[in-house]
Image (tube, rainbow, N blue to C red):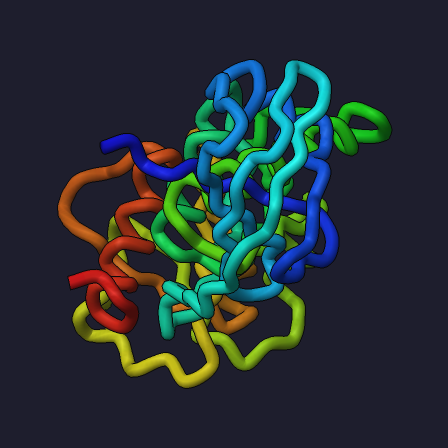
Length: 244
């Protein structure tokens, strides 16, 4: 049996309402999935819950759905995780964002670090941020989350690490003395920093430590940047969240 497609809709949703899907959603429904009239879809707008809907018009340029019922569904983890990810090259950053959303992070801040090999500014930065936001939306459509994680505009590690917060601050370090299993129960969520290719510099590690980031160990092997964050998030969700 084919899984009912989940589509993100920008704006209000209400039962018995007719909704015209935006260009991206219409293209996905009409051109990619090739759904016809009377096909079922699920709509969500990130404000909580989801809506069962039926297509009443489906063409290559225009798709309209009839909203039928509301389902008060929430699969958010009880553990709030804010990932500060050193910006990596190529599709590694996109993979990290996609999988972090699937694993339940609530916020992502791309970080400029000393060993960050990606230069972003002006229109290129805005374009990349829009692209990352679309990846977040797509990941939510796939994994059935109805709450959209926030992806912040990139900032320097120094600015992000020095922000005032009550979150438990963690920095993955291969020579740390503490493991995930030895961490205290986080009462205000977790703020996790992961370096880019090549990791954080000694100066950055020291700075993070001065800002209250505890160094933790995930295992004996040195992980790539696209593996490290996802491994730590999985371990944290298993220990404190909803993976088990």
